[in-house]
Amino acid sequence: MKVLVINAGSSSLKYQLMDPETGKVFAKGLCERIGLDGKFTYKPQVEGKETIKAADVAMPTHSEAIQTVLNALVDPQNGVISSMKEIDAVGHRVVHGGETFASSVLINDEVLKAVEACGQVASPFIRLEAGLRKDYLVVTETNPAPADDTRKKRRIPQLERGIGLHILTDLAGRYHGSCTQEVRDGQFTVSIALQLPENQGETEEA
Image (tube, rainbow, N blue to C red; front, side, top):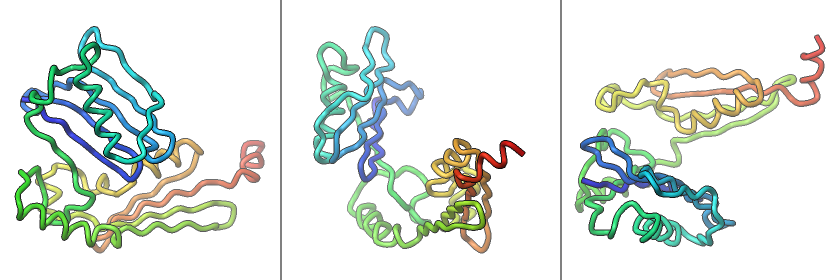
């Protein structure tokens, strides 16, 4: 069985062709800077196939992006499948499933309506704040923590459910900042403090 897993963002599209029964990955990659100067990465996990890294590809919209992915997968020389008929299913995540979606589901009319309802309330739940505190730039992001039953079904620790958590922790690590995480009253909060450039030298000399 082969499933094409898609994770599309506002200007990017991650993809992976895999067998969910065995965990085998046939190809994976990324379309980024969609609508700008498109970049395409293709990493076939099949011996003898060549990797394409950040190639310049015109992708004005996500339609061109997904077509680029499909073209790469079925390419006669470098593809990993002979035709689209080999793809048994396509999966995509939703931005915010609330308590409606705790696991993968098959798409039908009821699911589509539920996804649409989740989409109407997803964005207001995310709050991002930034400000100066003494010699530091502090960035704080808050979003709802998942309900206990949802978290258990997904087997994901509560503190790992922060939206954009990895982005903020990466920033803290890259610029030697500090990072704190907290779950309180149903809200997940992550904050990072980055020392302003003009004060970094004083700390290092001290």
